[in-house]
Image 1 (cartoon, rainbow, N blue to C red):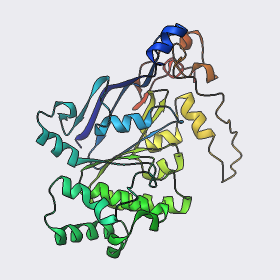
Image 2 (image 1 turned 120 degrees about the vertical axis):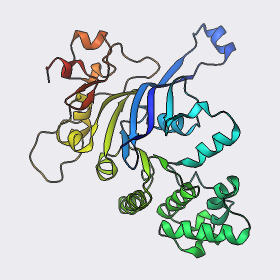
Image 3 (image 1 turned 45 degrees about the vertical axis):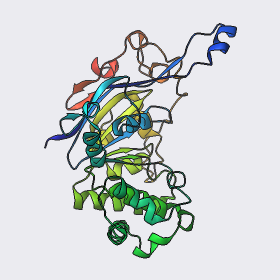
Image 4 (image 1 turned 90 degrees about the vertical axis):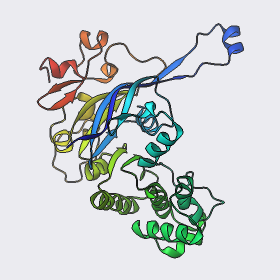
Length: 330
């Protein structure tokens, strides 16, 4: 299978300094947050890569970088062999945008409350000139709503007339309007009840199967990831610390942070295995630790971990950034 999406050494730095006058009076230096710091991965056509990690690890920033909502500080994003920042004219950029779409986290905030569903789902069709005339627009929007399990009559309703799960279905219908090949899903079910989460995830799986969609799925819920992903990348403080096939990651986690995340999942089968909750707090991203960012919380850390930053290396088909794994200490 060929890779549809290739990300190489992607980085994004945000300037979070106080205003100039405050800095002069208080004699403060400028401050920068390395939200994403050298992330690389590929996603094959028709597959799902999930990015997981605690809040603030840079997952959503990666999602926004991929669809062009942020410009990268460093690195490249290639879509179907073409660098996304190398689009030479507005027409090329529009074609690229049509082929990749995004589903946002909060269905209550991402839909315009003053627009009817017809206008919300029809906006991409109108923008890209994919529907001509009111009748064709209505027919296309009705077909999209039916695809995600809503009724054609819902075109005349407003967002407030729907539940959270139904609103997220409208968001999915809007994302599918341009017949994209690649969908970036930024925690699309985290604002929903568990039973509704399952319905939305099943719709997404069915759409992937019938339309051959490729997903980047951002989540902090490992149970959801287990259900939808083919490959999983674990992020910590802006960097990928482990990436492997889903089955391998859940059965043989290598990085200590991945092990901690999996140990924190409630053991509903009561197997009696020892569980260690995730220790400590995520460090301040304005002042990250030296060496491996995880070393203050890691039970296997040594002097090398606190001074030298590990690179993402391949061990038995698993990509891991960890000195302890490399040296055979764990």
